[in-house]
Length: 325
Image 1 (tube, rainbow, N blue to C red):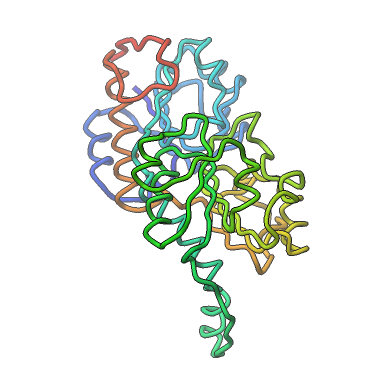
Image 2: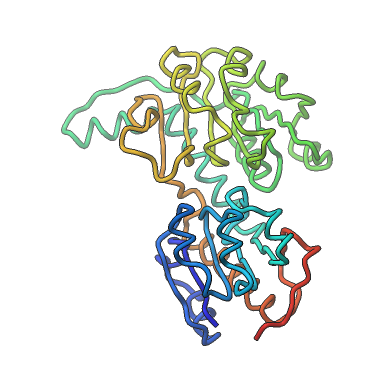
């Protein structure tokens, strides 16, 4: 059995997941993802299983991968880079790992907020260069944060926001009323309700045709001038060109993001040099604790499916898993 492994955090982080995969006795072929379509195409065709990160797994890739490829196990929860419809059509079980990184991502997201409001990079750059320049920041107390997507990560963000004394308003198609009542989260029926009142907007939604470019020039005009926007979801949820213009004009006061529309970005990506942007290289879930949880779940999913047993979580449960070992 040959298994392709491309996620770098899995490979670079020590932990029990390595031994679990090694114990299978399978041949492990590694590559440094995220891979574009051409690189992915070059590696599939002779592999039986695939533990992927954010590689471009298109219909063309899947056509070459089958019938050899029996199971596709996603390390993580976002499957927007995978042609799910083709996976289902070709009878390839697509597995994923929900519930393993929400705490870590929420912590990272909150770090981006604090870095923006406290001018963290400006101050550390000053002292590192031998200076003592200072800017006046802002408290989080009594500010209003609007959370778009009240899933696992959004809920963790709400809990942390309340701990800082913030007002929380959230929008979700499946709003958890019990959670809202318990943690003092106000329900927003529309995004416009959030745009109108939020000092901070935190994005926690999947990338879909409906959410692509959800944050753009059309929405900036509905927001408070100087709003801060946080994005640990997907870069494509935000229109890059519109965001750059809004940051330069001051309509958006700051953008804290862990994701971009192109990853890794070109050196001249327009968001990388702006002083009111804090950008990290898609590492919100990359802690030792979270990586081990995600990687272990991805390996267990693969092993279970290869043995014809029900995996922990499957994106396309209508596709039966079949014993192939």
